[in-house]
Length: 353
Image 1 (spheres, one colour):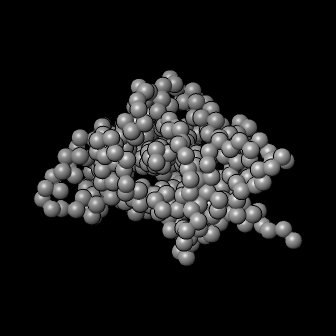
Image 2 (image 1 turned 135 degrees about the horizontal axis):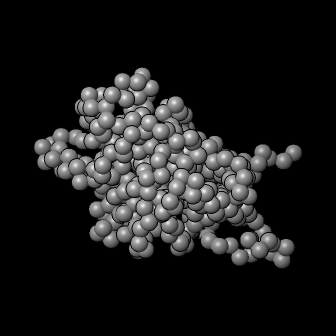
């Protein structure tokens, strides 16, 4: 009697986890189940078919955390990954999406990126499945000449999934019919957000705990917030304040040439993503919004790109923080792209070491 596919894959994935890692078996099983489901969703996309909508639901398991299960992806990265080698630092899946002139062109560009990333995940999944296989004369090419050490394959596969999550969420803004009553995109708010954080820090006030104040202001300044579903939406997005503090720290460390060390907040924010709870708020947005929020950016070294990704995410958080007369479509779009940027930032961060 053969083992279930997830248990067979888990045994292979254990080769990418450190021998002394206490949660090795539980983490390998979680990763195996996640990878099998991710590849199942990615296969039609890799062939240029299907929808990416179901991929986004995997975010709730991408944190690699479970009660009596794995300890969280941040902990796995810190103390559980085996030999990983040097990974290539991937590019942002969002940068340049707005370069195309219209929504249909932007949609096609997002679709092409989804297909490319899906092909990468499928290839990494195949390689992960052969970890620990015989390296004798009958070994496959992947076993005889792996692209990365075992730990590196796990990290690369997870980073690829994060980029697919980024693209699948952002694609909803282009795949869904455009809301012709979406109103105006809130203006840039990076400076306003950073000034608010600084002022509260100077006065000893905890910015992350300002949810009630934020909700009261949004309710006062945005007629759309009177819709009952807005409270459900806000329950999830309110954690953006804690995320903003973490992303700001990431940006400063990257600017100083250092890798961010606190990953729990970003990992937790990705695992808490539940847009299905406010599905009625999601609609397509104007091409001009994507042009502004996903612009073409110049080449830069990896750490500089990480800092830039965090800055773009912080701007989105700032637009949510300062929102005035924003439509429900606008709120949902900003939250969606904040999630997408966070996925992209974490993918790059884990590839760097």
